[in-house]
Image (cartoon, rainbow, N blue to C red; front, side):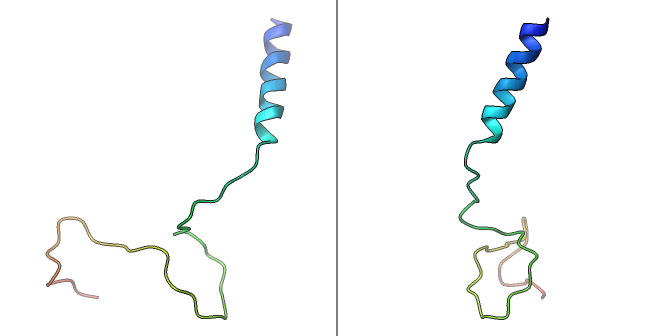
Length: 55
């Protein structure tokens, strides 16, 4: 039981050291930016006609 616990702990430590890779399109960045930035995401409503979208 102790070996399994130590193995899982070591595996978790190794997994936490892997490099974090942020997705290309970060749709959920909540930091305010003062520079104009091109939008990364295109939010399209599901099941709605494209011509009758109210904004």
